[in-house]
Length: 197
Image (tube, rainbow, N blue to C red; front, side, top):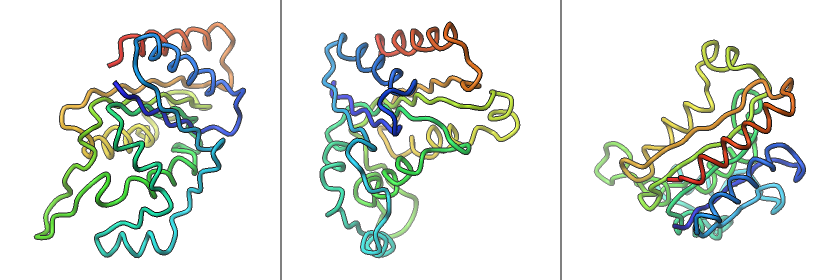
């Protein structure tokens, strides 16, 4: 299986990078083909261009600036996102990746006769999110409805294969987490991806 891992953290020595490394190690051990995209290391430009926006509102897509990223996404059987949750949502660079790469004709299709969006990324049969939160669970989930999780697991999954398997792994209150709890989470990530999907 070809697994596309999209990583969004500016520090290669962060805990989030350690999380990514555990996932990669487990997936590699299972014999999966790994395609990693480090958005910060590659200096991905998250800004939707005027030409991309114009194409989008006219029902098309200008993919000239993101052709390589689109190709990688279309070749994937599984998609894994690894990132920190900042301000209750995705880092700007990851949000920009969605804005620019999950374009009409890629992530979804607009029927010419009107009606709802049609799935575009039906090649993605498995989807996983691994994220870190500085705030405790009780701030994110009950108080705010966990907006990042809602957007990803409810907003984007209708654009991938119907019945795709999904996983959402998160560590909350990371700012106060001690080493034993961090290690337990890393072990949890590794166990999850040892049996992924």
